[in-house]
Structures are given as C-alpha cells and as structure tokens.
Image (tube, rainbow, N blue to C red):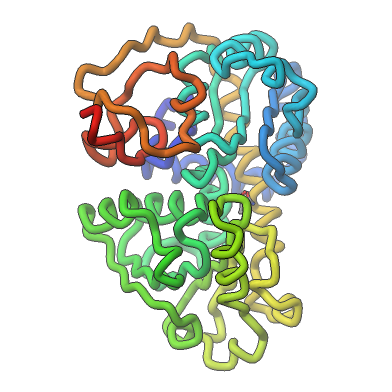
Length: 361
Ligand code: NCD
C-alpha cells in the first residue's frame, strides 16, 4: 500500500491506495473476528468541534471493533480551545497522548493546519464547507458494494452543492475512475464553488448542470441527495427560501432505473420523504454502515504508523501572500499559520482553496 500519513484532502488519495484500502475493507466485512484485536493498545483521539452523529460514532465504533481505545470530545466547551489555545498547541498535546487524531471543525483548512503540528496521522472528518474525505471513502465503498465496481456511471448530485463538503470531495475522488458523468442538480445560488467547477473543467470531468431533479432521474445510476446546509448560510432568509427546493418522494422514482441507488451522507432534513425508505433502491442507511467498515480499514493502516516529528513548515515562497477572503478559513483565527500553495491555483489559499484578497497580492 502507498504509505500515507494523513487524510486531510481527497488529493491525498491515490488509486492504488484506494484499491488496497477497499480490499482490506472487504476482508474486514468477510472476517470481522480476525481484526478484533488488531489495534489493541492503540488510541484514537476524536476531536469534534462541530456536531456529528455518524462520523463521530462510526469512528469510535471502528476503533473499538479493532480493539483500540478512544478519548475525545464532541463539544469543545470543555477543552482549552475555549480558553483561547491555538489549534497548533491543542494538536501537539493530543498527538502526544494518541496514535491517530480525527478532527472535525467548522473552520475550513483546519485539518491541513493540524497535520503541520502532529506526530501522529491526522484524519479530516469534515472542515466547514470545504471537504470530507472519509465520507468519500464511505460513498466509494457503497458504490463498489452495490454495483461491483465504480466506473461507468451517471451520478446525480442534488441539493446544496455550494456548501456540501461531501459533494466537493466525492467529485474530486471520482477523477480516479473511468467514464463518470455528473448531473449537478441545484438552484443557481447553490452551485458548486468555482474552485471545484474549475478543477472539473481542467481534468475534463463530464458534467451538466440542471435546476430540475425530476428531469434527470431517468438518466441516473446513482442519485446522491444532500441537505441544504442551514448552518453555513450567511442570510437566514435565503436559507428559508431554498430549504425545501428538492424533496424526493417515492412517486418520483417511477421513472428511475430499477437498479438506481439512492445515496445521502445523512442527516436528512426533509429532502428524502420517508416513503422512499422502503424502496429497494434506498441505500443511505447501508451507506452509513459501510462508513464504519471502511474507517476500520483506514484506522488499521494509520494507527500502526510510527510517530514522526512534523516537518518545520515555513511560508511557501510560491504561495499567494494575501489574506484569505473566506471568513471561515482557519488562517483567519490562527494567524501564525504559514502560507501554503493551494492545489487549486496560485491565487488561492492553501488551507481552504478560496481566493486570497487581491488588495494584498
Ligand atoms: C455530512 C457532513 O457532516 O458534512 N454528514 C456526514 O458526515 N455524514 C452531511 C451533512 O451534514 O449534511
């Protein structure tokens, strides 16, 4: 397996790494007993600065099913972060006590920042509206289990494509697989961010954009529904106007392929009516279980890696010297962070991929 010490962005994943990880996951599914003590003596640190049910629980369950211990928090109020401690210091301490750190934060780029200061592997469990690579592992596992392989599919991504970090990561991961066509279904206001669309164009991913779900349904092999992300809207009125824009009902599946799979990272908030749950095409609850199983495969790899001093990272001379325009970016609160080059372009922030301000360029 290609050696990897962190999973903070989908760009960290390579095709051979995925293939090895998935084959380990299949073995875990087939022979769970064999793995029951495979991480005995290891400890997972679970740092959740933002609400979570599935991601948090599935990581904890994954660690425990491998025989590892877990400590952490699901609300930062009880930690030194509430006393103003920097992320860098919190990470240094947490790494000293653990074998692997899982971090979720509303601040975009926080996992990238954490990896600069950690002696142990860092896993991004969601950084604001930016990315969510382990949900992508979950999604890929579900597609592979349901269809036998991942290539040659038409996938509809529907809902809040602007703020939906799971979608941003899934689109990027699909670059690894052949013949994928995307139907990007959202209101104009909630289209994919430009850095994601630009990357899709650069790597020649096939996509069309549409505002109408029902017209796309007959074409799709996979329909990936998402929640309108209330907590990421600046304007509550705009959220109320858009929140019920798509509601998938059983009736709407009449025109769908018989083997179409309906996926959703969950939680749902009305966008999939409960009458869809009994349809054999509804895959979203199984998807959540696959999330635990693929996270077991990931922890099994990361928890056994030797501790390593993090490299001393200084400002990258090629990075844009401006200030990130994104108020949710980790660099806005943790101003000591070095400037990094973004993989989405030289005028973008190396943490959250948003533009840096022109004034300071
Ligand atoms: C998603 C997330 O947190 O980004 N949920 C998850 O991790 N399973 C999707 C969401 O919150 O809408």
